[in-house]
Image (cartoon, rainbow, N blue to C red; front, side, top):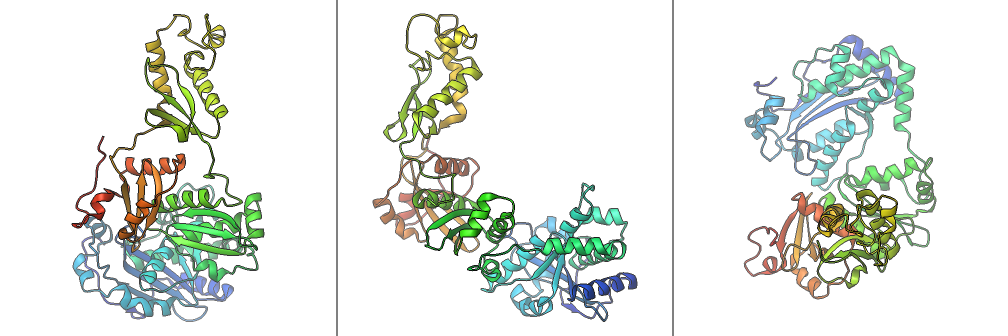
Amino acid sequence: MPGQHASNSVAEGTLPSPLSSASATALRDLAQELDTTLAFIDLENTGGHLERDRIIEVGIILVAPAGEPEVWSTLINPEIRLSPAISTLTGIDPADLAHAPTFAQVAEPLREKLAGRLLIAHDARTDLAFLRQEWRRLGQVFTADVLCTLRLSRSLFPDEKRHGLDAIIERLQLHSAGRHRALTDARTVAIFLARLYSEQPARLLEACRQQWQRPALPGSLDAQTLDALPDRPGVYLCYDEADSLLYVGKSIRLRERVWDHFYAATSQQREMRLVQQIRRLEWIETPTELSALLLEARLIKERQPILNRRLRRRENLFTIAWEGIERGSPRIVPLRDCDGGELYGSFANAYRARQSLRRLARRHGLCLKALGLEKPTSGPCFAHQLKQCRGACCGAESRLLHDLRLSAALRHLRIEHWPWDGPMVLVEEGGGQRLYHLLWQWIHCGYRADPADLATLWERREGEFDMDIYRICFNALSRNRGTWMPLAQLLSPSGPQTTATPGR
């Protein structure tokens, strides 16, 4: 409870069973039905960020097909600061954690407790991800069979709107003193599952089987290979029998995303093609999702995977160039020929750029002649005859008012000017990784793990403006994601000193 101090020692088999005899009996029967030992587990963490936050408490209740339930719990020193909000929520005092064992110290006994057991947790994906991340920091891989009671609740009670642990406590009218403590919450999950098995065993077992169903894998890939995928951001590459690149994708959770391809293969044609043809899988871990987005876009454009449609390289892109209010009509020009001026949008060809202007004309009552879409003859434009133009072509509306509305209509397509005087480096950190992305005029010139290599990368820079890369980088800048600094400052003898803000 908030305000109480917690024991910092491991409690193993010394605590009385937190389960009633009825719940324990039901769970033993379920364990016998499933032919395994059930491990109800809950974690408390310093926060919800997988890379930044750490585990501070583990609580486990083991129920075998025979014998009494076994209890195991411990506080864990996260080796980072515990916020007052989390301390208040859990009732765990930072002083208790200072004297608790680290995860490295409990990793082996914890692995022994979980080995060969069925892990059962509420929102099991999150708990399993934090466990895997802790073992990953130790250079180890952790896998386990898992049952998620959150998914079971959604499956068995589709009419209920809320399925969190608090909602289940309320729905079943459970007494749960000490909420947000690992052992207490593990007990709640155990009681919930015992109640489900007692009241509707057939439905529960069927829901379990559906949750555990794994798709058929190609002969060249096995579950162990896919389980080795990290639960972190990155890019994955799928190859066919001839070692041609089939597909490039990205995700903040690589393992989950790749598995999704195989689950969807029975209902989606493209996924079926991928599963039928894939023979080899590679992946590249990245610090954050932003780096994964940049790397995915770059690889797709450079290597042209067979099954990727979005983000494919398009040659000879066109844009809408306009000098501004009362300074002439917009022009449809090749993007590569632009040098300065205001640019709006990126289009596969000139026809699509013109069609975009026509749609804006219909939506905003703009003049086709003023837009350069009709020859500048005397008399009103065709749209004015249909009462779709407000008359800039025949004096019914001033060119100033027309162009003000045109400026507002084009605003969502505007390509912002590069806000610095020189090349910039976007520094991305996460999960013990750091990448340096070199950017110039919104062009992604490449990335390196060692900043000393950026000088050579800049000298040999190549690439062209790409709308997808522009959107990724501009959104990152707008949302203050990553650290931006001038290349010259990063390479200076004194090293980086401050982050950069746009110059104009």
